[in-house]
Image (cartoon, rainbow, N blue to C red):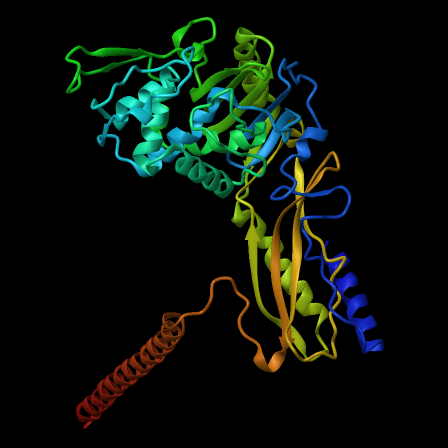
Length: 468
């Protein structure tokens, strides 16, 4: 590897010397890498073209299984197709409530908080003047999909539902949703809420970052105590079959919602966490109510068994980093240039198939587009892709080396562990201590030598006296 890097750089620099007009050329466009090279930060859906053999059959119009840590789509179909999300719209309403309100806040119910909801929609049954906590409203929204609970939260936050839906759309955009548009806070079939499997996965991922969401949506039953208008308590039971039944129970389930819209079919949003690895699944336009649960379990099982998310350890790449800088400097010997500054940026993780991971991989850098102009004394900046190559030939860009080349007169240390004042002071102190130690040894030796000389002279004098 060292010989190859040295040969490439030496050839490039020699060409630059022969042709003074040579310029810096570096591939800064990681959004569109060369064929066969994938930057997983951008190509989040790369794995869709490389499905494992055990991908389950899904009954929905569109679906997705999303790896929350790496932001990768593991499996899916029509993931960016706009479709009515129905009641799983409530996920965005609850998310904003968790981000904006305290669970112990109180909402005083007004007529706009329940008037206008269609009769066949699930409701908590609040009434004007009733005081209800935000906690109870979120329980009602997530466990029973109560629409009036969402209206109460929306109007509490923004004053009117129309203002709140603007907040929903803004928050969706902040999460990276590009095909989502809300005009209603609870999923009314008569309005044009639109979203996609991918966008809803981003929303549910954000929801499950809140422990309160996980705790509430996985509760089997919640007792709502009496209010100022009703002394009797109300029982709020979880209608989600992941929690309410043994048949569809899933050990790693951490929350979600289901929905149904006339003409759009059944929908389900669910998240799971196994050994710290969070997966998010969305199915839209399913044709069967029970089938969506079975499909989701199959998706989770396949996701955990057929895909692996690897942590990118910077320490693993430091030898490659140091070797690359050394090679560049070696190739620049005999010129007025050297590496001035350098740094390395890496992704936190990489997701790919478990079968591929089992084959092993190697790490390298791509210098093919780097040309150094040895006649240019101004600083030249390079972004060099850091690459992981799996032994089946699959290649991923996992980071970038930032390298600045400039005149040696301006040279600074490129060691990632930069020298500090203490480092320089420590060197001086060590030198002083060594010198003092040598002086002490010298003085001690002189004293010992002088004492021995005195004793020898004394013996000689004593012997002479005896002889006389």
